[in-house]
Length: 329
Image 1 (cartoon, rainbow, N blue to C red):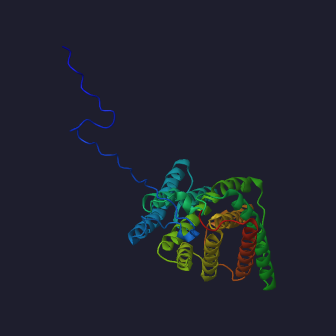
Image 2 (image 1 turned 30 degrees about the horizontal axis):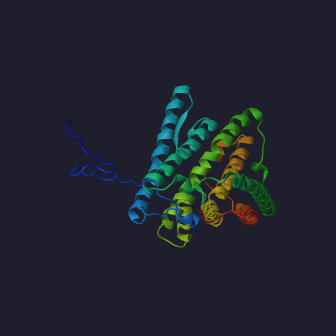
Image 3 (image 1 turned 90 degrees about the vertical axis):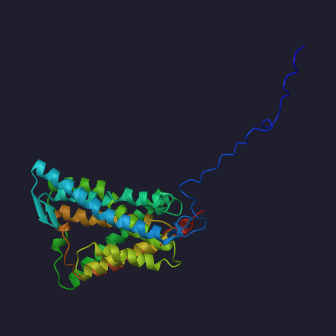
């Protein structure tokens, strides 16, 4: 007689079988961006409630800035020795070729940009794009609009500086010159290719990381803006007029970052400003002087006031007209 087959259990394991636990969902490393947050509050998430993350992250970014800069400059010195470019131990002129020196000066700063993004991702567990804007990315059309405003502001600032120098009986012939295309074109290529990355790296450090790291624990963005501006000015070797100029630049750029919800306006102004400064020196065949920092005439503050005022007014007016978002979605 054939044995009856074992009854089949349609659902679930047979009686007495070990129960398999449901697989646990793993939380993604990059946490969601807080909704409705201002630019300086974009780093506020479940992982950043403890102060140590901001302290460690700031130390990493600050130390990395100097270490990466030294490594890049050391590589430049090795390459210079190989190709026969004179190398000097003067801090304001390491290389005998000013164009070569400009390349490695800009690279030494631009190379810090991946470190800032990586620190935000690894230490604060947030998307690196939140360093750019409340949209989680660079808003390119808005950035290009800010470039147009920056060009106008810079031209008016230069005009104000020239008028201030002329009104006080100072020479303006040193401000402009032409050495010829042979001297200008190589420098121009370097300026156009590398200055945007150098300027952006400084904005991501001092108006991005610093402002947002303080914004995790402070409601008012002023403290982060002022500290970032002090740190930014401390890296320059100007006299008090030049330091005041750089500090004021940093404060206005930090304020605009918060008011417009991103770094587009600061990056635009920084890029245009540096391109003009290096470009004028290169055109006059005095690029080595652009790499040196020292005394700045007090009349230049007239140009700074006009430049920053026009840029701030133009950017805020355009941001309102275009309804640029200032909080995260």
